Image (cartoon, rainbow, N blue to C red; front, side, top):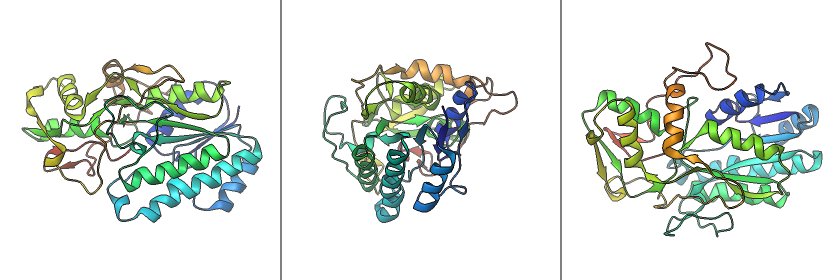
Length: 310
C-alpha cells in the first residue's frame, strides 16, 4: 500500500509516519513548503505521479481565532483545497481519509454527538472545516472527526501546561468546556486501521473515551509533573473572551467504530514520549521530537483557554 500524507510536518503526520514505517510500505509526507494544497495543478500532478493507494489529509488551517477575520483564506485550505484533493483521489482510485473536528458542532447538546448529528458550527473555523467534510463526502471519501489533540510533534494544550507549571505560580483554565483529550499516536493507529479496513466511506469519530474539561486536563498534567494540581484555578469561558466562540460540549460518540482508550490512560501512556523519556513505536533512537512548549494562541498572562483547533 502506497501512502500520501498531506501536512507532513504536523503532529499527527509525524505519528502516522512512525506507524507506517513499521510496515515498510512507501509513504510520502510533503510539508506545506513542498505541496501547497491551494495549487490544484500541483496536487493533481503529485497524485498522478506518485499513485498513492491512501491519502490522509492532515493539512489544515487551525488558527481558530484568526479565521474569524480571515475566513476566505481558511476556506481555501479547509474547504476548496479538500474538494480538489477529493476529486483527484476519486479519479485516481485512491482512498482519501480527511481529518475534521468537533468544532463542526455548536456544543449545545447535553450528550456526545454521534456521527449523524446535524453539524451547526459556531465559528468561521468550524464552517470551513464543514465545507471540507462535505467536499470529501460528495466524492465518496472518508471523514474522521477528532478533538483536543496533543502529541510530541507540535504545540498543544498539554505542552503549554507543562511550560506554565514551570513558569507561573498559578494558572487559570476554563472549566465549562467538555471534551476528550486525544493522543495523536492513538489517532494515528486508528487511521491506519481505518485505511486498511473494508468499512464504507462516510463520517467516523475518533477521540479518546471518557470526558473532562480543560481544567480537569490541566490538573492531570500538573499531577503527572509532580506539581500541586491546586495551582490550577477554574474560570468560566466568559472570563476568557476569545474572537471565536467555542462549543461547550465537544464530546464525540463513536458509534461506527470502537472508541479509543480512556483519555487518562492515554495521557499516562503518552507521558514518557511527550517528555523524551521513551520512543514512539518504530521510532529510531535519537529521533524523538520533543513536546513543543508555549502555544501562544492558547495562553495569555498565565491563563489558558484551551486549544487553537483540532
